[in-house]
Length: 154
Image (cartoon, rainbow, N blue to C red; front, side, top):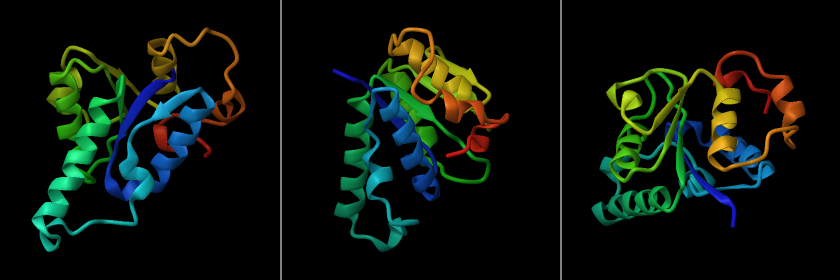
């Protein structure tokens, strides 16, 4: 069985999250954040039928609660649901890897690993998944990285 990871990020970053999903798969981890695979752009929740909005929320919660860890990729002035998802994970004692800033109070709760960039996040995820130390399938990609989780060449 593979290690399951839910990625919490702004909806507008769905394409980026799909690339992160690819990296996770390269590490033999299973992304559970289906929202990123099905997103077609920014949603106008107020314009949608209430039943549809609740179904989106239910699916996201189910995906998150099936994960063994949650990777949070915040971006200033973007997204809000990822903060609620991070809090849901902490309530259910699911480890959280908080990558970058901003860092609200939840980023400092028990069970949250704070890292500065995607390299640090992947390292923590590998340790949580008990992947042996040594060269990883994505070592060449990570070698191209610069500080900041958006700087990884994907």
